[in-house]
Image (cartoon, rainbow, N blue to C red; front, side, top):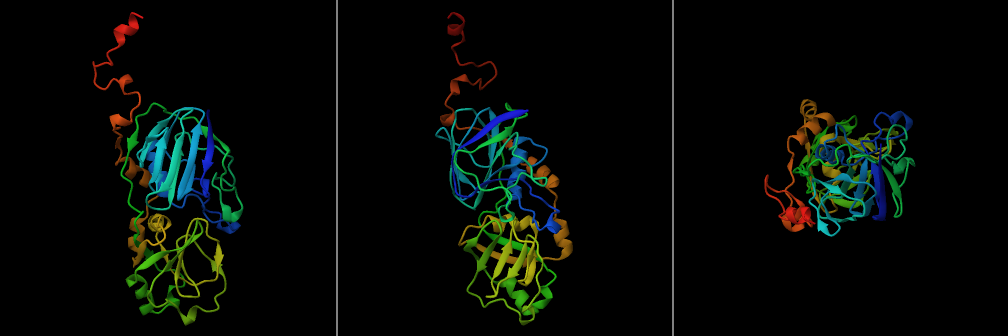
Length: 343
C-alpha cells in the first residue's frame, strides 16, 4: 500500500538512499555498499517497530528540508544533527510523527559524519540487484537533488507512540578492534605492535569508500610488501599506503587492490571509523579470532538489543503546539466539551 511521497525541498551535497547493501556480490565487482553506519538503520528499525532495517536517507554532514504527502512516523539516528519540524526542535535518536504540509529541516551534524532519516514504511524506490542503495562507486543510483520525489511505503502503525533510545556512542573516536589479515605477516612484529600503540587522527581525506588516518609517528612500512599483485580486498581492511599510513576501507570500497593490508577492522567497529569527523582521535587494538567471533552479531541480534533500550519519548509541553487537545490524565479534559455540545 502506498504511503505517499517524500518531497526533497532542499538537500545537502551527499544525501542518498541506503539500506543494508548488497552482500555477496564481490564476484561481480560490487562491494556491499549500503549504509556506512548500518547500526543507525538497526536503531531506526527498533524505534519504528520494524522487523528489519528499512531503506533510509543517508545524510553526510548535513541534511536538507523535507515534506511528506501522507502521515508517517520517522526516526532520526546516526550522527546527531540539528532537526526541526515546522520550527519545533526534534530529539535525535527518537521517532516522531510527521504530517503532510509540515517541513522537516535537518541541519549540520553536531558530532559524527552520517545521519539517517528513516520512514516507517520505508523508501520504495526501485531495487537494483536486490537493494535500493545507491552505490556511487559502482555507478548504481546517484546522490539526490532538490525537487526529487521518492515513493514511500505506508506506515503500518501511524498512531504508535513516539519512542527514544540512547544511541551507542561511535561519534567521538576511540578504539578500533582488528584481526590479522592475509598480509599481516609481511610486516615485522615491531611494526605491527606500533600499529596498536600509535594514536591516529582521522584525516580530511575520506568518503564512503574509505578513510585515511595520519599521525606524527614513524611510517608503518615493510620492504616485503613491495610489488604486490592486486588481490581481493574487503570492507574493514587496513591498507597501508606507499607513505606507510593506514587507509581503512568502508562500504563502497573497490573489490581489488594492490596496497598491503596490515589487518582488518571488525564489522562492529566500522561505524566508529565511518562516523569519525576529521581530527578525531582513533587507536587500533589487536584481538584474537575467538574474541572477534564473540563480538560478531547479526543485525537480528542487534535489533533485539536495541529494542531492549526503548522508552517512550516524553515531549516538552513547550514544544506541543496543540497541548489542550491532549487528554493527559484519565478523566481530565481540555474543559471546553460543554461549550462544544451547546454550540
